[in-house]
Image (cartoon, rainbow, N blue to C red; front, side):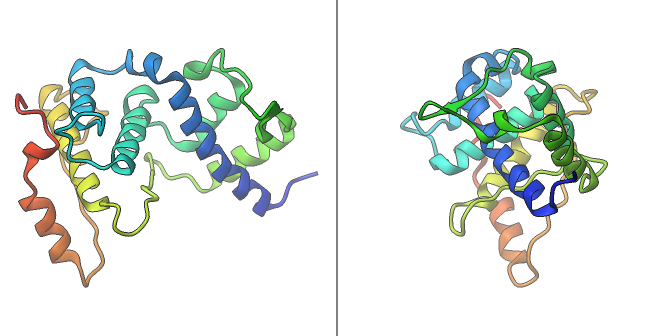
Length: 198
């Protein structure tokens, strides 16, 4: 029996939390797959450093962005979910997570439940990786976006043949604030988020 769309949506959003938890638990092992330049970029922006400009929510979003890009190779979310649910690829050997001694909701699902969530995700997929920063108003999404663009361009410049990094960026902003957003990105002092050697 097929599950409702609303249940698939709920599980879709719950998966984001599970993915974040996987990253936090495996952070050290995940970072071993990053380029040295990426590690330096992240370390420079880590709020544990006194000179870091990014606030904790911005840095956490940057970390997840890099995790999706370098560890999971910018795969579309439904493909990430399939590998995660099957405990294959980068998720091989993943153990069942527990909260307060109880298995999480995904460990109680059947194969049909997983198939429903996958079908929902793949039906809403795009031919490119499609991620969204879901941060509250005033958190600094524009600066975060600029930081991600700098990260992309630095790595694309260093490895121009690697298609995982973008060489151009198209910025969309609400019409009433587009000039302000573009000005904020263009005038932002890169030295605040980019290590001096780059």
